[in-house]
Image 1 (spheres, one colour):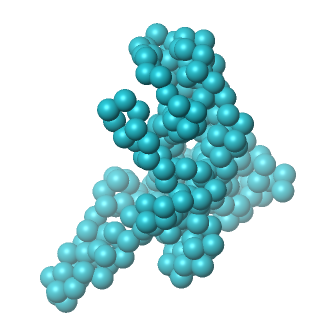
Image 2: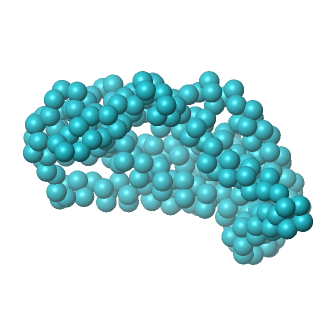
Length: 291
């Protein structure tokens, strides 16, 4: 256990962008809240107040999640390749640390630690946003951002998304680690070309599109399995504010679909495929020490 703790600390020491990037985003959004325009002159009902909170805070949180997804993917793509590129892999192989432990520590950083860091920074930044808006805007608008139930739902949503995306996108995670362990140079090229070649070969020789459809399903199939769609009327609510109508989740509790997600065969097929690729990355790490 101590070995894994030190390996995880090492990743934070060597990749300071893990916490610097979300901190910069948080500062930028806080400055925007301080000096940006806040103009809500409409009189709204109690029900509309309840719905404004998610409308304001969810896009703010989504900004962190979008950047986190990009950075986490970049980290997984570079982590094993960078060790070989700067020859630090030779030092780590001289220590009594297994390649399995090293790869699993990097997997943990990319799938769990980075999302948690962004979650914590987003949480602090959202609290600052709510406080600033409360001070700058009318009292009725500030009050809609301080709903204990809303904050609880935001926390549950973040943690649910971290866990379920980590499971659903494990094939992509495994592929990123496999390419990072394999490529001698041009990691991005190796990341893209084999899937394109396989897609083209299947289409050219067999006239089918099984690989392409499965890839698309994996990329776009997360939301329909992890969440209830608008067909579930209890999960969504629409109200008019001024001349506009907005539709937001009525409650996170009605939106999440963990049973449907965990009972889907596609979820566990993806886990098996991702685990196989991660095992391949470990084997490549055992055999490759230099670029």
